[in-house]
Amino acid sequence: MALGEFELIAKYFSRPVARRDVLLGVGDDAALLEVPAGQVLVAATDTLVEGRHFLPGAPPESVGHQALAVNLSDLAAMGAAPAWALLSLSLPSSEPAWLEGFARGLHALAERTGVALVGGDTVRGPRVITMQVLGLVPAALALRRAGARPGDGVYVSGTLGDAAAGLELLRGAGGGASDADSPLVRRYQFAEPRLELGIALRAIAGAAMDVSDGLLGDLGKLCAASGVGALVQLERLPLSAALVARFDAATAERLALGGGDDYELVFTVPPSARRRLETALADGVSITRIGEIVSGNGVRCLRDGRPVDAEIAGYDHFAG
Ligand code: ADP
Ligand code: MG
Image (tube, rainbow, N blue to C red; front, side):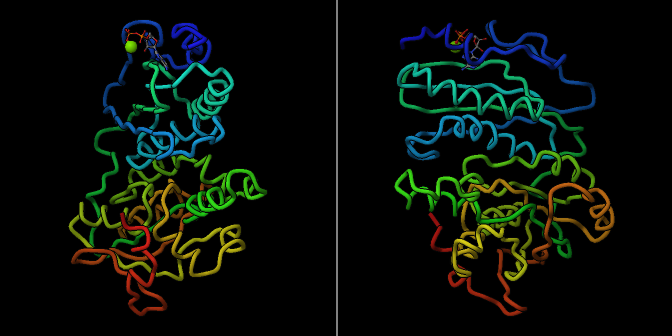
């Protein structure tokens, strides 16, 4: 590497820390972090491999954002407040231009969400980024996948299918056409972790998870963990204006049901908490009730009240 490992860390990854619970951050053998009494540590990690989780040649700023965002999304799904992050970076060379962009994307999101980068590792190798995030939640309030009960409403935040649509545009555009400016591409490259929503749902949602691999598959995991089934009303899927303008209705629905990378939350709310849901979310991100939890297992789709085959709904196109 043109830049030595220590210079690189000092230049791009060591920043003044604004959190008082960081007793020791970057620079020692390990970080010292203070967990407040009554809270539990929520830990998540995700790895991005170039060519598999982001396109070769992706804007480095988006890769830095994404590396943190996908991890923060896991914390949001647990109802946790984010606190600290560790970054393990494998790079073929020190590439200052790439590092500058990457660090800019990472630090911008970290600052906005109150996350302190407190350590990591830097090695030479293929471009692979592993991020670990640590957050806090009062133990009894953590949101799990295993809390859905028959009769609960099923909700999603924001809109679905945009990120998968953005990825299709990027692939089709061969990396440079005007689609690169589409809001759909931006949704794919700069997903917004739903942290405030996760915290607002603490005493409201029965079960929650983030939609990283597609709604039907992820809701299926939530149902399996809860030992229940779900009915999804296709006409209720929240689709963005940008998605509907750029793709035909069948494709938009297929992307919304099976496309990944949206990082919205899917969650269930028991009838007893519905009133609280409305007041808690009065001015936050939009949410949409898309169906309900039923006894049994698996996710089934309805269109105008009639069963629709998941294959017809386009889900199998994405399986595997
Ligand atoms: P060690 O050999 O003890 O693992 P390193 O030389 O790998 O220490 O790292 C020195 C310090 O820099 C440590 O505090 C480590 O957590 C931090 N660090 C290394 N790489 C990164 C990185 N990419 N981002 C943030 N902190 C890093
Ligand atoms: Mg090390």
